[in-house]
Each structure stands twice: as C-alpha cells, then as structure tokens.
Image (cartoon, rainbow, N blue to C red; front, side, top):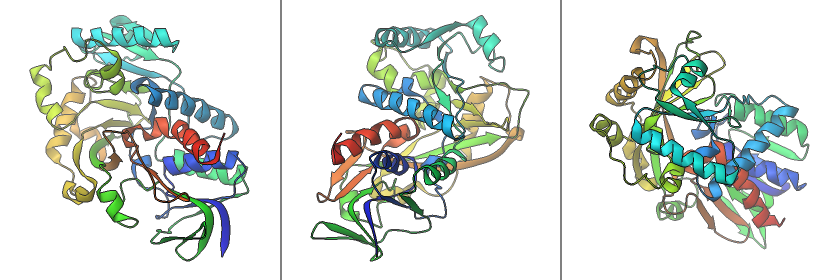
Length: 381
C-alpha cells in the first residue's frame, strides 16, 4: 500500500492549489480526482482572475493567486493572458460606485484607472456607446482558459514535482484513521488528508455536509461561435456586476443607497449579472445566473437549462454588445458550493482529516492564495 505525506481529495483548482503549496514544502503528495479529468466548477466558469471584485482577506488571497499564476505562466503555458479587468458603468449610480471603489483601491495602492466613454470606445469598440458611460480598469488582472488551465496546471505540476502523483477516475468512498495514519479506499495511506470536493457531499461524511450550512449555486452560461469582429480583450464586467460584487458592497459608501432600476428587477430575481470573456478562438463566454439550494437538496436545482433564463441573459447582453441567439454555439450549467457566513467551509474531522471546500464563485481568483494560508496553518510556515 502506497504511503504519502498528504492526500488531496479533489483535482479542481482548490485541491490543486493545496497540492501546489504542499509540494512547495517538499511533501510527497497524492491527488485523487473522481472523474477522468476535472469537470466541475473549475472548468465551467469564465476564467476571470479578478481580485478587484473581492473584499478584505479574500482580496489579499486574490493578489497572491494573481502573482502565482503569472509566475507559473513564465515556466509553462497554463493559458494566462494579462489583459486586465474592466467594470463598465451604464448609469450615474454605477458611475458613482466605480469612483468610490477607485478611491478605495487608490488608498490600498492597487492600480485602478478610470476610463471615459471615449476611452471605452477606443479600448473596447464592441461595447455599444450608449451603454458605456464610464469604466474602471484594473491592468494587472488576468484571464485563463477554463477548459484548458487546470489540465495544463496538472501537467506542469507533474513535470516540476516528481513527488506528486495524480490518480484520475478514482472516487473516494472511504476514509479511515488508525493510530494517526489515514487510509483511503483501502488502497492509499497518508499522514494527512485534505478534502476539496466541491459541492459533492454525498460520498464522504454526508451528515457533516448536510449540516455544514453550505448552499449550492446553479449557474447558466452561454458561448458564442467565434466572433473575431468583436474585440473584447480581458475580463468584461458590467453594470449588474457593479451592483453585485462584494468589493462594491463592502467598500462603496453609496452601495446600500442606490436603487435598482425597474428594468433590472427580473434579472436580479434570477441572480443574473452580465460578464463577457473572449476565448483564444474568439468565441465569447456570456453569463451568468444564480439559483440556490441547501447542499443536501442540491438535486432540486435540476439538470435542465432554463431557456427563459438564457433569453434574459442574451437580451441584456444584446444591449451591451451586438449579439443574437443565432450566434450562440452552446450553453451549460455550472454548480458550486458556498458558505454565506464564512465564505468557505472549513472543518477538521480529526487532526489528520480536514475538509476545505465551498469556496463559491471566488475559486479561480482566490484558491491559490487561500490554499497557501491553509497549508501553512496545517504544516507551519
């Protein structure tokens, strides 16, 4: 039976980030992925790494992740592109909020630049002039390709760290501990286990997960055919995002005072805010929506895609760029777990068995930074 210092359950970005930082400490690491390759939230998102959208320590985690992605990209192509993030304001309230957020980041020394309507047209000609009144641009932020990044990161880690082993198509169905040694599936042994299983709470410790306070968010997203005629470099975030993201809610004094325009009411009912990310093949990812259920009732969210929600997303998107339903190539659902009170679910079952999951929609941005602190806590600095 193979012996390791640490076993990670889950090969998505949060599990992979924990593996990376453990490897940095010289540990012998095994990562177990239940599917042939990661197919969960890590690959069903925009691929936007946007610390500017996070608040407090999560912003700091995002900065750490941003630096690490860039450093790894210099050693091996994991699809990082530094084209920045932009929040486009469509009315006076949204303009007020981006000015307040800029003031906050100016105080923190994080590079943020206001763009006039003319500068928006010059930098992002695909944005309709009547929509883009003003914008806030973060030049340091990056995009990755969600359908490529995690696979390339696994390949890089396996090549760079001989003491890493990744085993795919291996659902973990049993974890037992005896005399300080943990045995998984009666096949692998280790000194510690970290469980980063996304929203899957049925296979391991279902009682703990059912009472964890986590909820599952179901998202709907769309992708166009390649559209090279629309140039949308970087992470494009719009007015509804300004009215939703935690950095604005936390750091903008006027956030709680602004009113929701009537034409946003139905969109907010379905948790819709509009983001764009143009992939390397010039297709454009558009989304997204949010429906919620307790983690123990996540099946109630269903497997279907709600056509009405997609129509709402596409209709609002068409007010921002020239897009129509005939240009949509595919759509899908994404699912992720989150914890509204603590931003992540942390639970130590024993001194050897640790659950770290439920990072929510922050995973691509904050996992690398959060996992560094998590591993330091478990193993010491």
